[in-house]
Image (cartoon, rainbow over all chains, first blue to last red):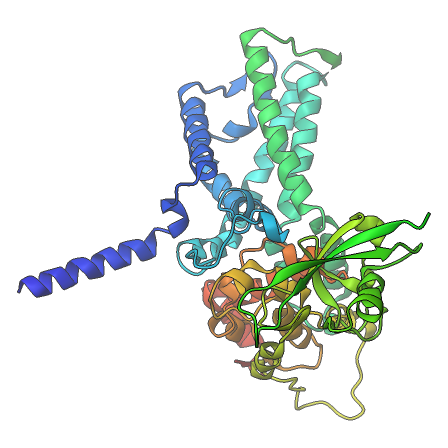
Length: 243
Length: 250
């Protein structure tokens, strides 16, 4: 009886260790500082929200359309092939560097890749559908930033929103899951309408810069957020450039 | 005065030594010299017992793959003026050593034999006709010279014991999968047998490829997405199975 209980406990422990990736149990300061930053960031964003500011016409991209969508957008980025490369390298040290002497990787270190917990990364395409679905909200925010006063208004914040929206759009549409959808799964383009080949070739061109736009759009998110917080606090005026 | 470079070459004969060591050699610098020139100078003039493998000296045979200052590179394609005057040359660490800079890459041929072979569609008439636009993707992978530098730099192949075939073999499978008249889908096979899930997209293989093949972007990620179609996306699986009834999924 006791033997059976022990076996059951061992089995449950085994399934737990199978579920929790070994990388999370290693004394890795990079991982824990990353998680700390993430937790502090989310806490601050939920505690001190800035939504739409009527005085400037600006909507914080983190709250567009609402802060509740952040987990999905976050998962879209966490399962993105570009970020996967970066965090597997620089957070989990799998390996930190391609150069042999500086890899932070060694024989005997447990590694399961994307086969157990990180198998979730295969759900990237579902989060991509979500990211595409919320894109129109960014354009609506852009429209709001230009029409918050009677007539057309272009402000400094409006320009930042234009750049931000452009970066997010390029980042989303340069996704590898979209590449697969538009033509990556096709072996015979001549058997299809030429739009398929054109779409695939065009998407491939922007896909080559996917990683760049992943980081540009993320940085821009933070910059716009800081700018809007500063204008709300009255630190920086939202200069009207055209009215 | 003749300028000289210092070469630190890994030496070991596993049949008599348990551990290897680095031996220093001074080699006269010649304009436009590549690392292979310097290593060959050592073999011809300084120590004829040095074992190296090389063939074309034109970066097309893939024989002279080694680790130069810790980075997997072709010795014949690495100019001395790009890597400095103190150069360390080691054999590929992912493979069993035969002697000095020569490694045994036999396991790659065993893996290649496991990949389902090219299987043309049965409805085709001879001679087979293919459009240029259809063979472009597969053609990129045909540039592979089988130097196995990508395998050597891959941490999954080098440091972990997994069923992962390695980037060179995913490239081979992708070249067949993306062939316009091939009828087999190898993505499920790669995922289940070839350990495709162990690749974590760190792109080192792409960085070291001397033929500049976009290994990760054009082969591995594409195969991963195809495997997602068949494993994690029920809608895509339904559509794919309906559209390609004649396609055999391995």
